[in-house]
Image (cartoon, rainbow, N blue to C red; front, side):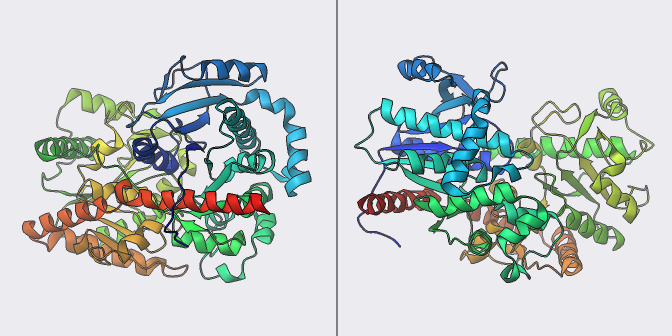
Length: 554
């Protein structure tokens, strides 16, 4: 429901495990959104993150010992250590880092409190459950304390908590400080991700799944019941896409109050001459590494494609990417093609033999052993990408015009082979492919088109659905984003479609048409910036504040 008379918060506290802690896509959501929120609310938006390694330097964090100086002393008396400063991102919002380890001493009492009030059985929590809950509970204490210290009792205050990990913060505030309006965003339900990650059919069987039953079967009951209780007890429950909204309705038995799609800040994408310079540097580096690996001369006009993201083999469609490129290889295309998988894995470090060749800068005349990965992998015999390449006999043999290069390192500029960031390599690609099976939103294809690089994704990604719904978006690569229909059962049909698009795009389009498609990709990305999408969050705050008002009146 949209209200003409909007309520706006005086203060916003927002927290998530990835505040000042770069792990995955939620970091991108929070860190890019922060600039726009800071411009609107100017230091009335305060982020709270985990102080995971307080003894080490955190490049994301700029400490300011003058901020909330008296309040920090109050927290010390409560045996909770906090550091206050600025998040080192555009907008530089205030951020509080919490060392939550002292709260572990209260774990049993906290879990009993959650059982007594919300029937959450934390004995069933597994994996990162304890760590997440201790941090979340600490966040609840921090928000409660700041609320009283800043004397916000007569102000409109929002506490925005992200993902199941922050559930206990939302529930603590719901119970202890009911005048604070709580917002909970699930970026992916814990049980939905588990169903998909365990190779079960998520979409065809969705109407038949019971979330509680599946949580028992997949042993994620603690996370599921915590997430479900949070969704049902906050003032505004949101998901990041329609597809996740349907998932929440079925598995959490709660419809979202509003969909809040993930926006993007494109101010770090180079422009003009800087763009073309960086593009050439990236292409040259990608080709150089491939040549040293394979011992072959790669044509300067080789068609470079890639995929990236977290190493979720099925969910991110990494299996389908390899399958599709293998189909391209077997079709013996006219143009030389190199495919890159930019996905961090468990590595021991850069390949020494490859490093030596790159340092010598000599032309390589013979391939390295296993010339299809750039960094040594720990227990590589169990790596699913390498195993599939072996199975397909896709081993970069000399007579083949399609090569595959697996880059299993985090790309922060110090990996020992490329020594460039992910974005500084992304810009050198001609086409990207993100054929996700489970993708609540999908930043990687959005980042791709922001760099003018057309992309292929699926209707099972929230971003893919959004792109297909846009007037200038569509289902063909001509629009900058090709959205392929994917189901539980059409794996090989999708691989064939991706193969056809790769071959057609690499050989059949004249350069003028390629320029038009790249421009269309850029134009579509600009519609997904926070300038446009922040309105969904402003409406979220409005809904939460109004529901709080109604709740308190009862």
